Image: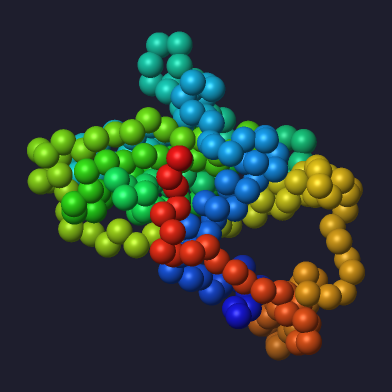
Length: 239
């Protein structure tokens, strides 16, 4: 059992325990939300629209993922709209990439205050022969990009890097937008509430202070909130 904590509140430094299969767990939650909110067992694809589609290109062993195709005539990039208003906030919350074995090798938590397009780059791990990018839009769900086969010439240039996907903290500029989106989701089914839950128990966050440092624990000592991750042995993104 793990406890989510936040320390040194006054300096806005956040710390959370993250398991090695964090990225797989987050993907599984996005699959759940795709079914719950859009009645779809699979991600949307390029056929459903290019604005939300994540595209990959590789140059000298460095892969770059970009959401949308605004670089071509008639194309469009996905917007990045930060806001404290639940009715306005709209951005790509995460981009992640899987290899030929359906293993998540990279995941990036996006900052809605960043300029369009939503993009990030990473070194292609040695031995990778195929890449597929996914992105999650806070309003429009999970999207899957086209398969990119890594040519032999590009693989030779790829550096030897760790392909373990790690938890990525939310950028401080994104706090307000995340809060607004949580409020928006609370107002939607299945909750249909205009406010957060406040009942004491395992879901309630409790704060204690020691001088300028704070600690948040979710749940009570007798009824702590569980932290259950996805199965690291299960291929996470096979459709």
